[in-house]
Length: 251
Image (cartoon, rainbow, N blue to C red; front, top):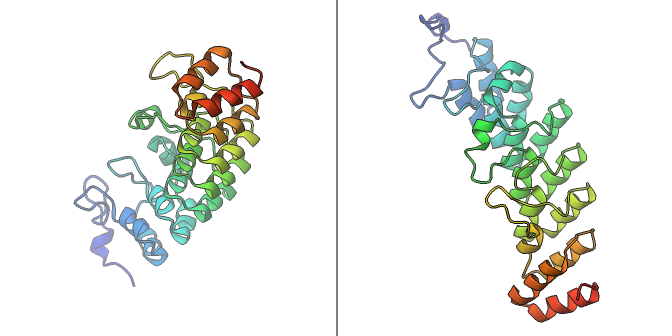
């Protein structure tokens, strides 16, 4: 099957008739989202541009990674330019982690994509938590498989303003917390973007979770007497927290 010659004639902008749909996405973008590798290959054979970004800056490669379309992703990895990816301000690793598709994430890692590539400042600022790393997407989704895969591929746990460890602690994700601590995540990190408080942030996030608190303390968490006093008198389980502080020699 071949497109008529008219479909291969460009206009004064150099665009093919199949370049963009009414919503601003290219037909290649729609094909990537459909998950049909034959459609993607047919479009490529007829000069469709895989490096044409959408209005949001996404490339077909990002769409395939987010939707979990492995075969389409495999095809687009080979034809997407590094320049287009750089201009997009985001890596397909972010997309695969956000979509929770471990098989696509593995393909991208095996293809040499940097697991520590950050979102551009412009994109990061669109998120209230100012996230930057692909690891953050996996952790915030509670995705144990993708988190483990990224960490094993060398993802750094302390690249985001709101550290991945704090996100996992706040959500009560014990398994992910253990993974991050095993990869040397800073257990004594703070989040000072919203306020300049020096109160231990991780401790604040687990005031009602004695199990999480013990996990952090056993991993080298440093809390002084002031923090302990605040903890004991603000927690719903103050007696248990007080007993824990006494056992640790803080009281």
